[in-house]
Amino acid sequence: MSVTYDGVEGGSSTQRSGCPACGAAAPPNGQFCGGCGHRLESAGHDQQVAMPSSALIPQVEARASRSSRKWLATAASLVALGAATWGVLDDLHLRSGLESKRRALTATQHFLSDTQAKLTDTTAQLGETKQKLASTQSNLASKTKALAASQAALQGAQRSLTDANGRIDVQSGQIVTLKTCLGGVSTALHDLAYDDYSGVISALDAVQVSCQAANKIVG
Image (cartoon, rainbow, N blue to C red; front, side, top):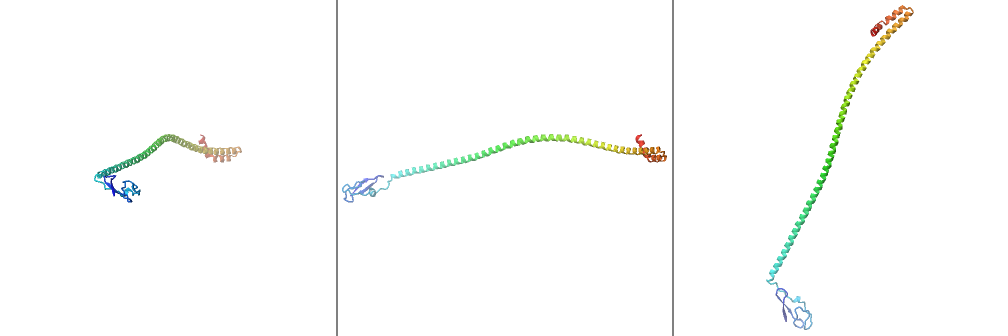
């Protein structure tokens, strides 16, 4: 003996046998027999679920279509997120590169400013050095002229000294001549005092040339 009841899904029917002990009709979802109290097997063991009918195919296809659209939307979202992330990363990398170049440009500008300042100072120092050099050259020219004048004066003094030395030599010779003449004359006078006339003549003859030269010097 068996009973028939409507299935849960798809409009199909399932059958369940009666109590295996007394044969009484068993409720579809009962766990014990109402006649003898025998424990019944689980209803799931006796159920035979029918295959889905043709009416369920559109539902399955709709669910599959919705699932596919969800997966496509998710994939599109992931792609868009990846593209956005890649764009952000590329933008960050570009900004990092620009920032690095900006810092390098700033450092180069500072270096150029420092170099320009140093160049300006060097140019000013060069101008001062040129002025000092011009002043030094002017002083050197003046000193060169003064040295030339001193050399000319020294040469004149040397010539004067040479002339003076020459005159001194001449005068020295003249003095010697005069002394020789005077010496002979003195000897002759001495001899004359003793009436030594021969001695007087001899003394005068010995200094005759010197006395003639002395006469020219004095005359």
